[in-house]
Length: 493
Image (cartoon, rainbow, N blue to C red; front, side, top):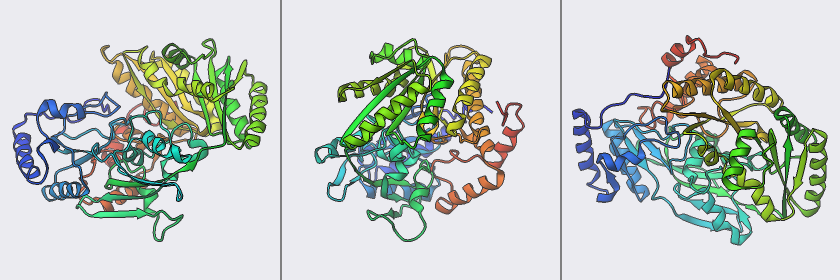
């Protein structure tokens, strides 16, 4: 059940053309001319998100500037039963912002203001189009920062982070987006403005805030987010350890956590990823290593001094062939530069790559790395591994060439096998990228029919007509029934 060509309808289909013209007239009744894009060349930049293997042209694109405009757009679409897909910066990697040929693509790019930054309360109130890194840049003069830091933080937006519950290298100690958002305001499919959470530590009623974060734009359109800010640690220091064996590095991760140490970040890269990153940014990585661990510790001077020695001894005891300790902040950032640049670095050595996202128990790390290598050989496709080792969030990068017959289809099948391997060892099919359209088949493996029915019931409670980002996140019973009959579905890999 390939997802590569999902329901393409020609942009100039007569029925769609008539619907488009009617909608454009209605939308331009309350939106500026430049807020409605209708020509092929105008909507084409929105045909996909960061998962570019899946593409569709939206019916049209709207770029509102105010909350009132978002409300009016959603009311109009609700009245006319027109589907809506909300989009941030388009950096998502699961096809969550893939548009619909018969639906509107609602871009929130113009909602890019920090509305309030309160250093005493340690909060920031921002619009959804504010870049992740921009929050920290605004907070730095006050000695504060925003903890979740996806690799795409220079470009990704806080609204997209909320939709996918994004993490980053510091999520092991400081949590995902859900642990760092205090409140949000969203617009319902009917155009109502609804607030969830509060700036206080707790609020009455059901915890709908946690339900909404990670819901992939399927329950409402976020128009404002209140995040918590943290004090910049007194000291941060990183260790870089090289290993001749990938499984040894995997076991070292468990040893650090078992010692009661929670690093600010604990990341791992295998040989192909190390070589690609070093060739790209020249971070000084040992390119003869089979695996690298980067472990960052932060806190008070005394705390970091003690933990650095502890971790160094653990790394050496676990078989590290070399351990470096950053001597200053510039060297610490250089250790991270290669890891943060790993995805574009791999893009330089292959015509195409497919970035996966699964999470496993740390104890299963050596086994999953070994089985991934075996699957890579079985499918004849190279896999570079880059991941948040501390919380078991894997990002295997499958290298392929879409110009070669059947290679994209094999890549998609290999990706599915890796995700199902994660489920088989007690993990899950996503850690921070979301399900979108990419992992919708594997939802059938991870969850039972009864569980999926409950997911559909939650969706229906917020969006009875199914107009917000339809076809994403939760598979239909029919899709699951068909997928479970395939030979490779749910295999133990």
